[in-house]
Length: 86
Image (tube, rainbow, N blue to C red; front, side, top):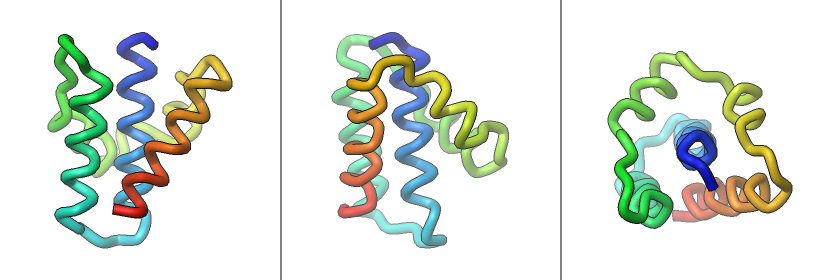
């Protein structure tokens, strides 16, 4: 999985977290956990992703288009569900 796919997964997870208009600490913690797991040794600028989502600089279709394989799309779906369930 490349960096663009990692960012897209987190972007979609953030969109899922904000969809209900709430700001739950449990959802924030789950986003952080997912970011840490995806990044491995790399670094993901989570603050920049939050800004992009909140300021609507990225759209759902654009984020989804970055997910090239069925496996990565399934992972993105499951991570969004994890955030919503948090």
